[in-house]
Amino acid sequence: MAGLARAQEAVGLGPHAGPDGGRLNAADEVAPAPTDGDGSALSGGTIRLPTDELFRASTGPSVSLKLPGLSGFAPQGEGKPLATAALGEVTLAAQLIEEGEAIGQGLIWRVFGPEPDGSGKLPLVASARGGTSVFQLAPGSYLVHASFGRAGATTRITVGREPRKETLVLDAGGLKLDAVIADGSQIDAEKLKFSIYEGGELDGERALIIPDVSPGTVVRLRSGIYHIVSTYGAVNAVIRSDIWVEAGKLTEATVEHHAAELTLKLVREAGGEAMADTSWSVLTDAGDIVRESVGPYFEMVLAEGEYTVIAKNRDRIYRQDFTVTAGQNAEVEVIANEASAKSDRDILD
Image (cartoon, rainbow, N blue to C red):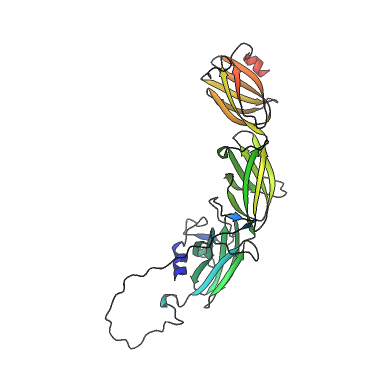
């Protein structure tokens, strides 16, 4: 009965539950459920997870009742409670690879009826979260889906009177991403994000699988090739790479950024105070606008290369060229004097 309680308490919940009470289109393939991005502990190249916490059912106080004599009653049958005597017990487990250990946590189980209802959708019969789960189901055929992060598997099962166990192989692994500066120094995690896209040879646009992944986060994926985009800052420091995720193992990948953090300010003299109400434009050496802003300071991360900054304060425009060297964070001062002052015609030229 503990398995029945666990299976029933989450019925209709989860990322795939629809507005009509947790149903799925019969024509659709059951897709892996979204993940919150949290990683499970992995070590030694193989994902190993702790076993589930045991659940214990509590019983209420006993009550003494005086009942009249009964001439007959229905036998309980096979030592089971009457409420579940007609149900079959099935234990569902999942592994990352063949011959691997059972996953102990992080799974989402969904059990669907085999036939669509009047709306053409498969009814969600039961669901559970955790690791290996036990369900009490009426005898018959069911569609079972297990999701583990972005990895998942689907199978059909048949439930009978006798207890049975079904094990799904997810063919999945973990991916942990990080990035450093070209000189090996660490990057502030708040300024670093990853996006994971569908990999392989593609002619069109790649499908985004997971956006805004923080460094050091373990993401669970089916084995295969993925296209990774690492963004340092919010301008043009972007690195792309293809990474293979191996089933049953944690793949750790570190990319190298050739960029630096810059602070721009307009001053009347070297080392002076930044002038307020300044409009900023940063251009590449080809004249393309990279970033614009307004304020006394202009902070950003730029990929290494040659740039031009244009600062406008009141009715005066100032221009200065500067170079970004990978790993060398710097403060760029634009001196508000006649040497750096430019007219609108000069800027256009």
